[in-house]
Image 1 (cartoon, helix red, strand yellow):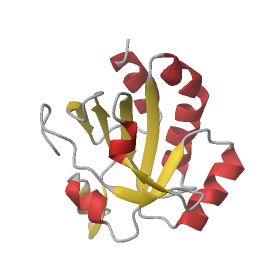
Image 2 (spheres, rainbow, N blue to C red):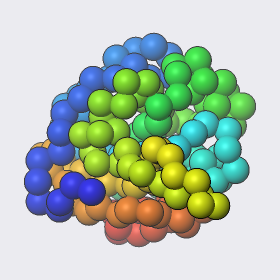
Image 3 (cartoon, one colour):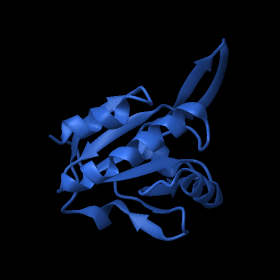
Image 4 (cartoon, helix red, strand yellow):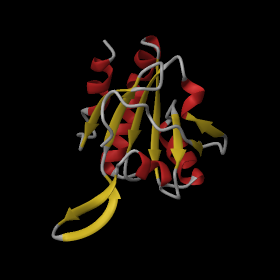
Length: 151
């Protein structure tokens, strides 16, 4: 996980509409940058829908929410439409940003070892510095936790 107080690595990735977005586009705003394993899985859906439900409160507090996974642009579009998600989902099929943010890790499930995304959320301040970092977050609790960090 990246350290609090360090400059968040800039990146450019396509969103669910195919539009390329860069972290630097959001300078001057707080950014809740969350990394999740996969669209349309139980935990990831709970997390995304909770961020969606709370999104007006995030914007009231001057923050944007950005979700990142290795899913394709098309997968993100279906995910957004199915659940009415009001925020940006970025596609990192090459896993470059996942690796830059140190969330692509070895995982163990039922004794099987594989590589995957460790659910992680960063709060990035208006200057692009990591203000808070949370690893191995609980999907259902993370959105409310992050909203509390903005209070």
